[in-house]
Image (cartoon, rainbow, N blue to C red; front, side, top):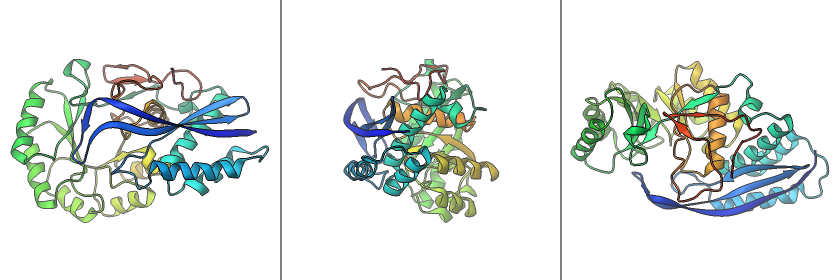
Length: 341
């Protein structure tokens, strides 16, 4: 096949309302749309490193993309495997760029085969993916079975009061995922988890800083609530370290942090072999990365509710992902990523 060029188109998306986490208060999301031109097809990807979560900057991603464009200029015919190798050579240390490039190429490859991306990755895939709602973004009438709540930036008494108010507004069968973004130390985390046991909590996500695997393991012995890791899970090596330390019950996988589609699958397989549940989520990204993550969840048969429901986060987006109905999203039969303007 003949690769013609790879373009990057910077964007800035404004949040409908500022999105608050334990680390930051986001008003805008910046990144770039990747457009890859191969033969007569266009593949879409998204590069959106998030400050505080990614080690690379958007500027570093632009430099990496420039090096790739220089490599492929006037290259003539090339195989998809050769392109994947070039991307990994220049973007191995820039996972958000690597993910955007691989997404764009896989978009084209699935278009060539005339199948949706999830079926290109695995023909035996899910037709729909269950999602969790997000407190402050969704309301009880939207019928999510699981709601994610950001806590950890108040004192414990305020967090308990907030959970009392939140849980009383939902049906009794609704479960909650508590995301702390690594803001606690071990002593505070034990106290926090004990205080949350009175509520219907599915798991507590990243209660301790990313590298504190031994303390995460200790915490698991002091609470009945399952512990999930997010920021701790950066690559396959980290996944193995977490398993060796018995530091988590759930892996929250952000594809744009891992970067490589094969590595994402390997982490999921490793988790399955060790009785660790997997969740696919994203990083407040635009529609392209959200849709790619939905395809990944489907292709890898993720039966747990995934964190991919924030489709109304921005005042406007470049593409529209499928509608969420009763906490589920169906994957369209459109070929490739299947995005609509």
